[in-house]
Image 1 (cartoon, one colour):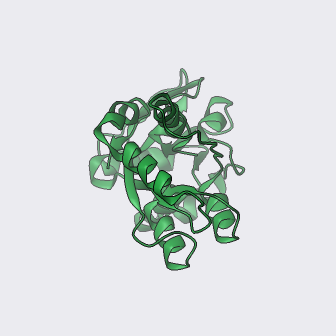
Image 2: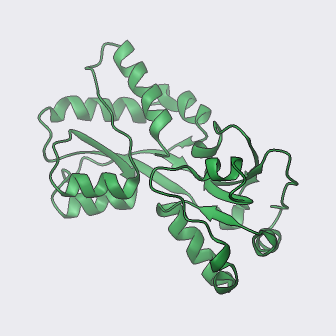
Length: 219
């Protein structure tokens, strides 16, 4: 879901340049990987790089077809009008997490890394009961906007277009969680040459502005 809007913009540009029509389906990363691994007929898959590597290792994506597309970092959001937390340092963020009455983070790779950070801080047992797990496909930002969650963590690309929230800023540099999203040719692909051309386009410099607009940076 983190790449949904970016892919829509890039595919529109691809088709405007005469590229083959593409139909995209955006779902949560866990669901996407499961469906590809189950053998559903897809030409192209875009996921976190480690998930792509697992699909290649299991024979569901073509070896050598992985193309890194973007880097995506995690940001922190609060409901519009709420006081902004101090994100100036790791210690400041830890204090904000401990002070939050409720918090939520993605169930994807960035969320797994964030949970590991909380464990390293030794605060997970203290905050566990205050963590709100988003339902599949529901952005953390919408939980923040509705007031269900006081402090939300998700990739910036998934927060920047959500109304009713204020993005307090990115995680401090020392603990920023950087996810590389990559594309690969599925083994069920019927047009591998076309898909490789599409991946090359999405990784090219002409796609850089779109990546910046969607809160990401080129890989």
